[in-house]
Amino acid sequence: MDSEIAKRLKLKYGPIAVIFADRKPEQALEFVSTNWACATAMLTAAANGKTAVFSRQSCPCAGGLIGLGLDDQFSEGFEYFLSTGNPKLPPVAGIPEPEGFKKTPALAKEWIQSMPVCKISEPYVIFKPLAAVTEHDRSPKIVVCYANPDQLTALIVLANYGRPGYDNVIAPFASGCMSACLFAYAEAAKEQPRAVIGMTDVSARPHIDANLLSFSMPYQLFCEMEENVPGSFLDRYEWQQLAKRI
Image (tube, rainbow, N blue to C red; front, side, top):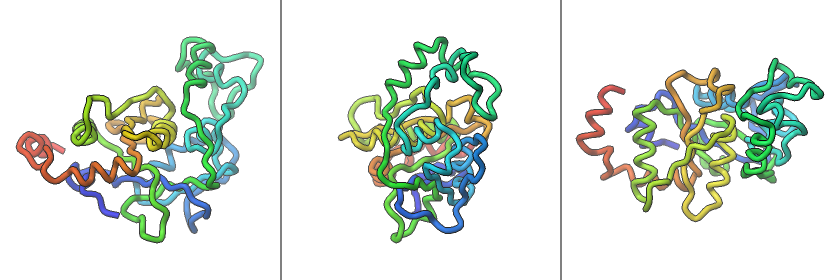
């Protein structure tokens, strides 16, 4: 599947399709170790042309299972890991100290309770370059782009271009995989789904280029934005001037 958005914005990495599937694709990258690893690394691998797959047995991160929709239950004590820690609980393997992303465990627990968790029926979540998606694949649920500030600006404008209002894009506080997948999937169920800015997770940032963020779109919003490219600001002087420096 080609993307006019990717061409016009001169994206360094092609868009990534997130597909829920009943079968595991052959020769796909998959975590095989039980040691902690970040699902975001596989998203970057897909941006570089690889296909990656996750299952409930091959995602070695409890938060990643939540973020990919493979589980809807946070592990016990997760609010301490997000905040101040708890000496009565063992540290998360591979992570030497609590993250300190929330000031108190109570605030962290409130955040946990506010998450749009779900548990998909399919056993596999696939990250695949959108350009490699064929008619034999299931339709993507989500499309994710990595974008620099200028490109992100264009994506935000384009997401609002054919819609009323000013809040057709959100930037929630969430893990990298939650912002890339979970929130966009939750938006897909709405009448007017919004796009999601992500990769503002401190622990996920090392897995992507320093000047990039993610922009996740429910598939129907991505298709709408693709259709809106002709005749939009992307054809006009102001964007063309800005595009020269990308």
